[in-house]
Amino acid sequence: MAVSPAEPPAAELVGVSKRFGPVVANDGIDLAIAKGEIHAVVGENGAGKSTLMSILYGLHRPDAGHVARNGARIRLRSPADAISHGLGMVHQHFRLFPELTVAENVVIGAEPTRGGVLDLAAARREVERLGDLYGLRADPDARIDGLPVGIRQRVEILKALYRRAEVLILDEPTAVLTPGEATRLFDVLRTVTATGASVVLVTHKLTEVLAAGDRVTVLRRGRVTGRFDTATTTADELVMAMIGRSLGPATPRRATRPPADGPYALEVRDLRVRDRDGVPRLDGVSFGVRPGEIVGIAGVAGSGQRELLDTVTGLRGPGRGDSGEVLLSGAPVRRGRHPAVAYVPEDRRGRATSPGMSLAENLIMGDQRTPALRGRLGLSASAVRERARTLTERFSIRAASVSDPISSLSGGNAQKAVLARELSRGTPVIVVEEPTQGVDVGAQEQIHALIADARDQGQAVLLQSSELTELRALADRVLVMFEGRVVAEITGEEAGDERLGAAMTGATTGGASGTTTGGTSGAAS
Image (cartoon, rainbow, N blue to C red; front, side, top):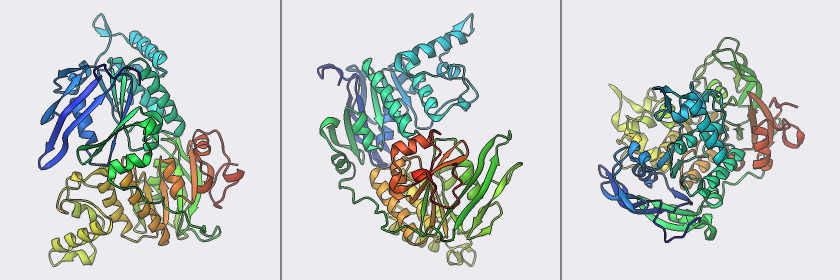
């Protein structure tokens, strides 16, 4: 740590409690952030992390307790108050205007002016100054929509530093970054704390906590269950404080691989897709997934994964200039949702669920016409509730009632609900996208087991994930995408961070041992 513990904390939450109706989100929490440190906050989904950070940033007001800065109690009624007290927050989902430049995004709302109009030259100079000072260099004239994810995150941090943030809250900052980008981010954060500023790191990735943090506070069910110095603790101790038990063994990789020459349950042949402007998004992608196999998709954001999954799941119709085929069990399929393909989207709220509807209603989406769920006058309420109770028990979904809105569930339980709905259909093919993004370690363990069980039941699984450890744990083969092409195919056993990271940035175009292993992968030679 950079300073003496005798100094008052840079920021402090004292006895903070917060309720939402009958739910206690925070229960008498004390949290002190020292000057010049990276302080991690971890816990299960629903542990109270987001609520606590929202209180620190002025988005919520505590029912009890208070916030202090440099030892003095402050009142936060809005994020504007927090900013005025030197508190800044970088949200997991960036809040940038894609059509504006880096400089315009950094200064928006606090623009330098000259003669009553925006002084864009001054904005550019300030972006360059801050970039040089903190190692956050970004072209001030570049438009946001043309930048990779890692640079966009730099812009978010620059926004906070431009507003003189001395305490910087980062919510799941590496969720969409490659290993190399994550390493560079933590180098930046160490530069920031070397100036005396503080960082609050909210993350589910315990390896990052131990590698980058100075101290860590663990929350469980709204209370503090542990405070640790990262130099003297272990991941097992953190897990025990988070979920009250140790994790089981990692999902076992099978001793035998599926036959390399067996038929495909899902096959993609020479898929070419263009966007509305005619720019290629997929350029000759070919691969197959066999029954009882998990094939992973890796790549930096914008490499074509979105277009690929939308085409395979039928959410994207054929456009002008598109070509290629998607086949199920050898038969070409027309675009459109196909009953033989189950789909677990990344966007739980936007694509996978209807937040205002009950858990029970969400669990039967797509099955409304199933005879077992219908009565004489339409859907049978009792049959729907019984289906929901069966699935919540089978998939260990924690909910007060199946009649509660699905939006009331924690992220991990909402994700398990989506998996329960899709996996229970028994389709030959399952497409799973970012299954554990924003999910705590306990729920991750359960979700991985569900996906592995589907594989063991003979279903073909196409798994897209930005978590390389997840791909290594589950995938038999990993296809790496770059600029709309499959540039490498690597077996799960050989998929190390360095090798995957190099392929994700286009530094290599070879498959495992310089070859491909899946027959129709289409990896470049």
